[in-house]
Image (tube, rainbow, N blue to C red; front, top):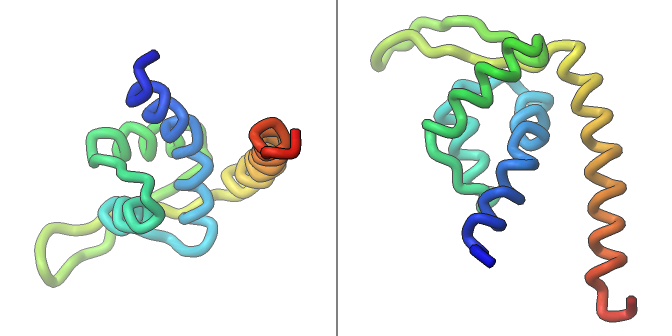
Length: 110
């Protein structure tokens, strides 16, 4: 078993949920999203984040706006849409169910 591959797949499976959760609190630009993911120990590189943001935008779960920056090029700020909030609520239920199931199966009392 390739443990690194399994760990990477587990992380990838929850990234969309985490990104929607971050943006449910406030709009953010990609480097800010990356920083929050890193703080949570979900290390993600830009090459992983940008395709996810594009996919979520194409699914109409996110929207974005450009804002001029005093320290460089304009920044693209992402925000969650109403469809994104609905999807996030469904993912939260799924996460809670999965988390409970995994905790039940992996607890020492089982």
